[in-house]
Image (cartoon, rainbow, N blue to C red; front, side, top):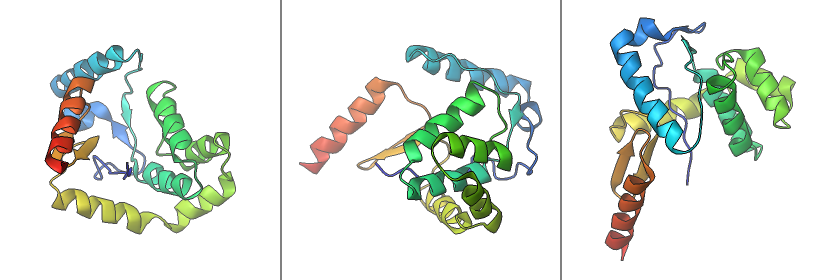
Amino acid sequence: MDWKGLEIHPEVPKPGLRLSQLLGPGRIETLWANVDYLAASVGLKLKRPQHLPNSHWALEAAEFAKEKGRLKEFHDRVFKAYFEEGEDIGSLEALAAIGQRCGLDPAELKESLQAGHYYPIIEQYRQEAKERQVTGVPTYIIGSYPLVGAQPYEIMKRATEKALEQAS
């Protein structure tokens, strides 16, 4: 599997914004109902963040972690920081602290983000997503079957079985 980070809302300003400013109350409740259902189905209890960070630096930091062989741990800690602890994952300081907890050099991570080392990679992913008509995250492309958004296990299993049938 090849993980590629994609900004869902690149228009969010650097300091972030209230989720209600972007989606409005009705859409927020629909979104959270789906997230709560899926989280409960795998035993997760998530907080409902009210602040939507600009995720560009978080995605670049993930590329830094990937290069250092620490992507999974970093990704898991960013998820926990945002959805369980309410941290602002758009903050340079928060990302450096998360990176440090994963064994990454926080100064090197901050320097990399400030210099925009991974900016071209994130832009490349954005272009690929546009070309493949990716409209949400996560998106899994299994064979020729795209699955957009968080999906139940059974749907992913069926898509995998169809892709395997097609490949044989």
